[in-house]
Image 1 (cartoon, rainbow, N blue to C red):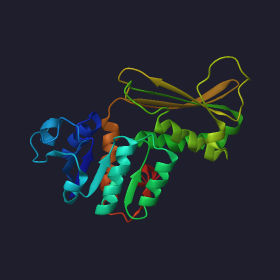
Image 2: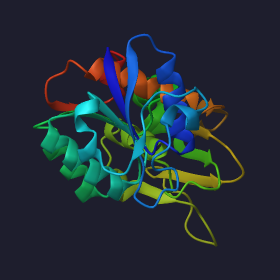
Image 3: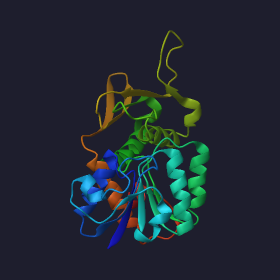
Image 4: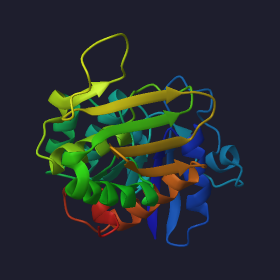
Length: 266
């Protein structure tokens, strides 16, 4: 039985992870963590998630519960995740990172910690999205140099980073496949009158509205036709299920930096 620790346990994603973990015969809830100012501290995580009392109280410090979990799942904010990562490193714990919006320096820090800890770090835990990553790579190989490429993403109005980590990863896959540098060829939104579209650019459009869980489309458009690879998430359970699958897979892995492509054997 793999014991799971959940960071951001009182949030929407955290509660979904707790709920699905409770239904998984190979996993159990070991710890639940929230930020020090959370009004939910001291509450039973199971009651908060609507799955009944579990005897796991929400705490504000991983160090207090590091013996109670094998793998930590974190969908919080970049700075908080990095702090949690350091604590997992000190305690010799594995970690699944679903947080997005990291700086280049923070990504480098994650890579360094992976020398000591087994980590799954992915911008999107959805199985469907990771399948789309492979389809996008294939499309870029076949038509990428002869099409205009645009990436459109939409999320709920509370999402703070833009474009989404998933959209950025899609852009990275396209750019790497076409031997382009995304930092040099990416165009984030358009406004005003300027030059005609450079065919070597990769465009990003971002939508933040309502309660959209997550929509992503990569468009390969040429004269006369276009190919669109789209993924639409209708429930956070998609991401939570993937994160739990990653945690189970990671539980016996040696130190290293893995992603969902590794978890799914893609």
